[in-house]
Length: 481
Image 1 (spheres, one colour):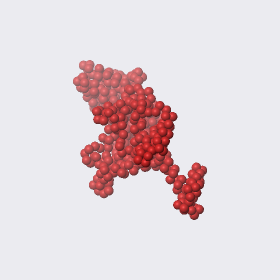
Image 2 (tube, one colour):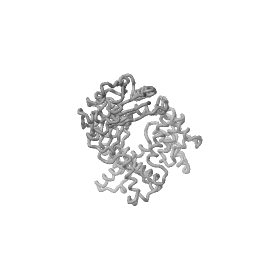
Image 3 (cartoon, one colour):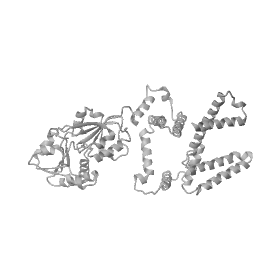
Image 4 (tube, helix red, strand yellow):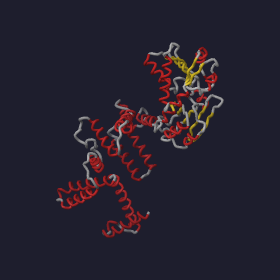
């Protein structure tokens, strides 16, 4: 006979299909995943019902539970009389045990018949008045296992199998990476039954609800404006498409080079100011450039934005085996060494003799010097203490003072390179430090100009001593503010 898997429906007996009921009526015994379901109480009294509820206490994880249930059901299916296995709802909606059974039975050549009933989704659609075609339907356990929810957040989503407050707590933590704490969600329990509950609440209070159980689901409305990668990529594609923006349609990878660089520097400027609202805006402008390049590549048949994401996701996981694998690395220094070894292996023989080959030649000079020094430090080519770096700076300054005119550029470069090394040992980014110094100089000089104008003075006519006094006054005013 093999294995017959039937759905019990989500709650009341009338939500079970006629086909499933007829199989139950003609059966002498039935195995159910859990007896904790309203329909089980309405089964014929002469039917012998076995449940796997005791496994819920014995198994450590749901994965282990569903694997053990599948193993036992397939063993029962080898009997001449086979086995009838019943699950809540629809057998192919949110039922991992059934998927495991199908895989094991297929490997053994055992036949599996699926007899559907209504799923838990149908009464929830009725309770909330939703269109099922618009929904993203996800297992709450899948969301609970993530650090970021696998959802398009500007579309509605339904999370099934929100079994407990513990699962709800993990779900909440994942959702808070994409939704604000006060975002309103809807808890739905026992939909379609006389105990149906629909409760709207802030996301942050999700795991504080006392009545979460095996009949509970969570509806997440869409965020109020387009904010997913898919929505934004569609916006970019429309700009580039027929009837789009003439300027955007004319752009190429090469024409957008300067814009990409400008947007990256505006992100750095927001970081220097520690201006988080501005950083949000500037990161959006930078994302626009990434999506534009991905869209153009898609039009050329080269790659899509999803290929970009897949490539970087694969690279990050490959280069972090201590996070996504079983490698044990004791500290950040070991992580960096392992990172370099992985990169060298990825490159193969291409430029394998150069540790510095991966540093872009187009980087600003200070950033490039910093990158070179960080690379060589990973193999121990570095000063053992900061005192040696200070001494090197003094040596380079002395050599610059003695250098003839034709050697000054080289000696100045060596001095700057040593200062970059000093910044690294101090834990300071040299590019950021110089930008901040530039910003301070600009603010002080503009204040100095303002003071001169207020007093009817022309800076060009002042002596150096007079200018110096104005400079100190502007500096003092800045520090006072």
